[in-house]
Length: 386
Image (cartoon, rainbow, N blue to C red):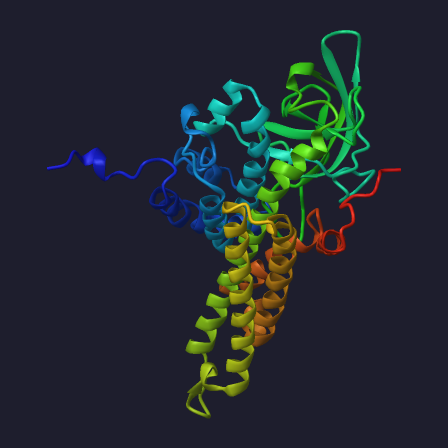
């Protein structure tokens, strides 16, 4: 007879994470949204279940999962709590750099579920043009570096243990350098609580840095090569996981719409809304858009898995397609379900608000369209920063 411990799923397994999402994250989602509070209980439970270390290397105690597995977790989370999904998504994007260039003790802490990280790229001075930081890094006559910046939107601001931070280079040529900045560093200032339209619990706030001192060894990769690191490591993971986030919200909206159409009746006709041709047509169109985006996401993951020549283009396209699909389905589901969709208890208006976020998260849909056009026309993705 097997030992009882053999029946307990290992940390980082789909079964373990699904149980946490079902039993912890989902019951708290409505309160997280209504109160605009950071989903600490859900994040802690995911950490204990191996969620933070999902993409960490096995030699440091992580699950060693791949991007496809991470996408499945983000999608599942986004369907029940967009805020928690965004916190984990940004953590995975930051960990891509930490795994490649971070110190071993931080990598072990991430793998063990003791360290939450996030990206600090977008700045007030360059807005969603994350590739052109205006924040600075300067040597101060010691082995330390002083960072000064006004970051505009940092998910998990004040909640994460570290920020993967961009600045202008210290000495080298190039557009940017990356640093691992502990969130308790003196001189960091989280500037107000997030009170947003959607993703209300993701603690996305401006963060200022005034002469924040870090060791030069806190640099992640070579000086001046932060953009290359972002393009090679961060952007593919962020864009694919953002698309997975959009699919999670989209599928939740479709499930809610289908349930409403099946159970709501027109008593004078003795029929459900699902039996009305116009309603069926509108639902079918939304389902078609979602299935097309799903196929595109699967193809993007396949392109990355096999290093296909079009993998870079697919990565640039997938967030734009998925974000617009989520927004269109959200709008269609709200119209299809009428006044009932506006009630909080149905859960549709919450997903509607969360669905619109991906459009405006850097790189925005408009920026991605430009990147795709440049890639298709053999132009460089980025202009020189002026």
